[in-house]
Length: 142
Ligand SMILES: [Zn+2]
Ligand SMILES: [Zn+2]
Image (cartoon, rainbow, N blue to C red; front, top):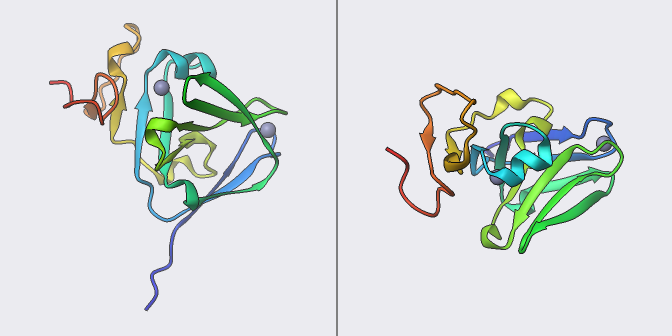
């Protein structure tokens, strides 16, 4: 019997950009870094990671912005919705903004990254694992 893979369709606010991610997400996390805040205008950004070859953009053309050396953030040039984050240091994964999925409740974040930059007025009590920077850069915060 062949296991049917899950499809995660999604898109931007205006609908010009559409994609489908296929298979199991690698992880999902809230990021509190300043660049995520600035690029979304929100107190944190929530991402879901997939291997790059498991994401197919089916409509529209992304606009890319190099937000820091080795980092490219892509968005819809028509409506401005942030769509993807790619970094040289995470070459084996593409980070999609989780809430661009048609069903954001289909994937639950399990951690906070760059929690060292979390805004003091933001109070979250979700019990998730917190990392000062990336989950690859050291053990979780106590
Ligand atoms: Zn759009
Ligand atoms: Zn970030």
